[in-house]
Image 1 (spheres, rainbow over the protein chains, first blue to last red):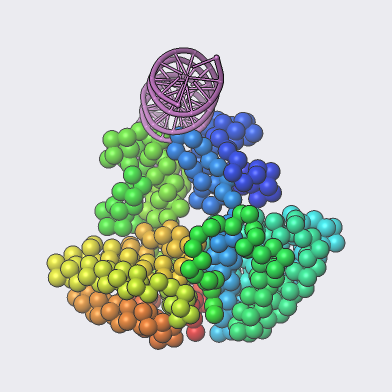
Image 2: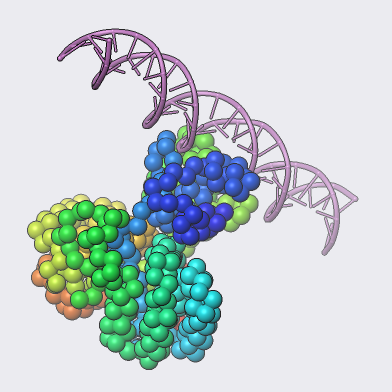
Length: 224
Length: 224
DNA sequence: CGTGATGCATCTATGGATGCATCTATGCCT
DNA sequence: AGGCATAGATGCATCCATAGATGCATCACG
């Protein structure tokens, strides 16, 4: 139920700032308010909505600051995982087959021009790499970020479907570097991948209406 | 309410494997089952209990595998934050005063031989460093791990109170290195700090009764 | 006389409490 | 030993109280 409500937000069936009520969720699922309430709490823990006491849940806008931070975290996790691969602390065979499966999903999604499928495969792809690091806590943390990351990827896939083949190509390179355990090369690639995919000059953060106007004290987190 | 129940687990007022029921929490707080239910969900999201359908919540044991993973994540976050400090992307003055405040708390806790206070200050100390990285998502993730990390630290403080002065000294060194933005030095120190504090040879993982018997395929995650 | 502010009524949505059904485990009886 | 009954606990639905917001009517003032 929470997952279904999350999908509704990820797929932008609610616009940012919209108010969602327990009754809404309960009604669309034909259930009562108690499970709906649980779902709302989940949505908030996933960072998809902000709960306002006695008022409801507003779907959180995607701020460029948050986008930067989210992707920096994923990059951090991935890079750490590839370092584990480099140390030989990973099941290379499993990683290889998993990556290939997700690349196949992406190829199909590109062929079908299905941005939602691509976004799902993208998340799973990066999840594979993180999973190779073998740290269950990291994997669990990434899963809690999953819906938010899916939202970002879905946004990109929706707004610039022409970029999907490029993303796919970058993913293929990432997969090769990850399998090779080339941590430094992977870090450089993934940083370029993120910058090109989510922070292209075409949509400069300064002109992004969803941008938060907070002090620009701190540039991007993540490796130098 | 959830926080109070979490404290009860962190402070080991429930032993691992014990069954907690909604009615228990409701009764100890003089509330009804609805908020108690919420608290149970929080406890599960914090990884302190495992929810068993139609049965109750059992307080999760601390497995050495989980301990390793948790501390690896904290180390990863801290090291990344110190790299941000090295890049100059941090408010050094705030970091300095925050660290000093937490070190003071620790000194008082050592003087008072108060392991609980020390554990709290320890978590806050490491939290300061992570916060300096300026990534709000990382800070939020660390907060969700807070109770679990507090449990680990509290365990150490309880079982080896004689180690507290050593931990304090290591924290002072860590603070200096972090302020200096010496990422490599910090990484080395924090790794030794974690190994000495949580994986001392005195309590070898192999002989730890709480150890999980899973395949030892993958050594520690975290930097090589 | 018109305009804006203020106070009240109402309405909505949450937050909490409780009743009922279901499911599990345990203990007793045969 | 095996099956049945019972007790306990969750899971869900419904009900009650309350807080915040909104809209309207009224009143004060220019």
